[in-house]
Length: 90
View 1 (cartoon, rainbow, N blue to C red):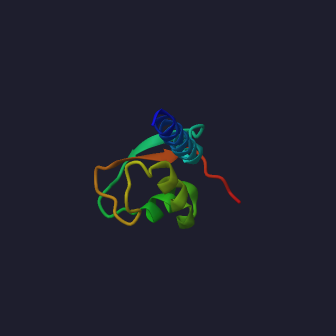
View 2 (view 1 turned 45 degrees about the vertical axis):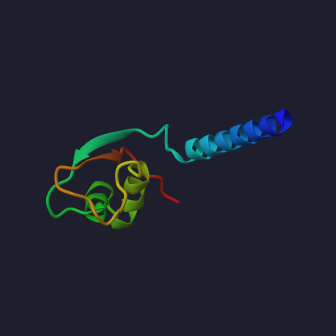
């Protein structure tokens, strides 16, 4: 019985560590950004086009804001979002 509990604790710990590592790996932690207040009628594409010269760069804004933007096609006036200072070009 004690062996089974120890195995369960070890398995749970391993799964938790794996989940934490996956979450940490996907966060852009070293990226510099500015805060921006969304205006009425704007989309991530329109903001990206104005800020970076290409509407396809909206994905960089979304990646930095996944914790607050659940649907990239639905942002709201007065919503505060992070804008990357620069975007990586492939």
